[in-house]
Image (cartoon, rainbow over all chains, first blue to last red):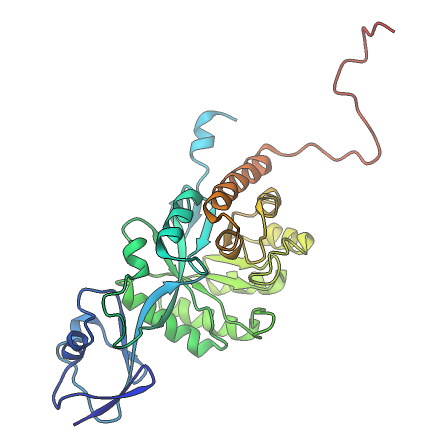
Length: 67
Length: 266
């Protein structure tokens, strides 16, 4: 089972799972967020086709209050 | 001056016209309802947001800032607050562009030091070059140094935003003379970003000829943020009108009566 680093914390995902699957698991569907995988943006159009490898580093970000 | 001039005095950034010259941040409010109420009172059209990691697995249903401030109603200006080098800043804004469906207008700020939050100008210049080359429209927080401001303009930044005083300090405009030199030389909009404390600070910035003012803490940390937002709206408008009207020359130690000197009874 691949172990990812999501926002700096380890997390197991089922083998073969995609960014889209993870978004569903994290209950982020329909929200505004952006994904970066190993330093590269994963555009929305590629969420379904992008799958994970062991050790992948994932960032999931949103907009928050700031000046 | 005729009426149409009053209507068409817009702030133009990267070819887009805005009716309000007051830009506001969305940080430090008690909740999203207060944020929204203050921003509505400010009349701001461009509002800044920060980009941060989502809280994984906690409060999945918690409200999102952009639900209260939808991009359909405001121009969202993502910032790079908290970035201390060019690489992190560029990375943050690429994430912001993805998050905002390809939106190109951004606020670049690369900080140098946690105590002062002063801009790191060498890293700011590196990041600005990379972002402009990548198609971003960059509004850039910078030192109030006319040479650096000009360099950022020459790189292709769409607005330069020198600090008036330290971020969140509310100390007002500490060096109007430097701002004056920047304004004299700039060919892109100049906005004061950071340091505004109260309405008169904003009015002074606009009277100097600044194209706009960006503030967050002065409104969010006022005792009554909504009322302060309203005060800032008026101050920016009043300062702008005073600048456009052209102030009378100062007459040092030389009084001049406002009433006729002829026809006095004594």
